[in-house]
Length: 468
Ligand SMILES: *Cc1c(COP(=O)(O)O)cnc(C)c1O
Image (spheres, protein in one colour):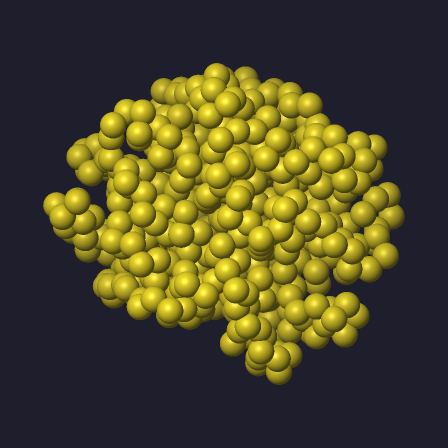
């Protein structure tokens, strides 16, 4: 199976190139040329088993199944819960899919551990070294730093928005204790860091010379790896149960993974809600408005403070096909909208595409900070659980629906201990870090502050490589 760019102007590549490059040379994102149909897991199939089957299908022969199994085993051994992503009931017909049992306490670990294994496998085979650039709104950076820390084949450079991540989030990406992980705190917002990443990756010469790749939520392997827990949840409720997933959304990686699971035949049906905070671009895009780059508003769910969700581009690409067939997707339509966006600050989505987007089975719900606080209190009162603010955005959105046809499953995207300041402020409680995080606390933090400027980042990358 091959992967094509959502902007239609790059050559199709295989799974490994799509994963290792991150972004296509034309600035687009890679999507599979066709959807593999993957048998649904059965009740009792282990997480590793399901991950192996799904990743093997998406790898399309580029990596042997036995190698993928080894990667999945090593990736998920670091999780504190044996089922990796357990389901817990929060009320009648209402469930939470807990994705925060990894080493850095957020769902980003699920995909990032696997990606690190994939890179090590490939680079070992090729005898090569790479520089991995990661732009983070808070949790991806920690997951990436922890997953790649100590890798013999990778130099990692993480960009995070200065003072826009919680001190605990920062700890996981600055206190790895390994010299191959570098962190830059840039003066600005997450969208700025993401724009720099895209610019550097799109600079062909620089990318080749520095052997640069990106592991953002735009990386296809992340999306594929995240589709696994949706399939596992479906298996647990039974093949005939329609599930309504509520997904706390920022860059739209997780909700897209739900859609991908459905395209690959892993779900009974596709019904998802993207729960967003005040940064509600997904709600506007799904209601037919143009692509725009607004100002990011800081909220108490900072990992979702994103104005232009990158992965929306993949959904846009899907919706350019009039008959839903992947072969009839039109990258030129997507390229045109994004070119307009970068030239004029706004890019129109054609009406027929908008219509198809609204019929896909996805909606969006906006949840304010006040409602998020209220939800944290209400969940504590009803269940005794302390949830992180991102999870609370999802749970608050989920309350706007009745579990009629089937269960409503909200993704719990991070552990409350990652946001102790907010938990203290809202609930008056301490949220101590679980034991598995203690090594991070005892090591010094290491990061450098600088301007939100591509040249600054370029220069830092050059110096990392010179030392390596
Ligand atoms: C990254 C993140 C999100 C948003 O996920 P996307 O895939 O970017 O939509 C939500 N909650 C937490 C805790 C996160 O770290």
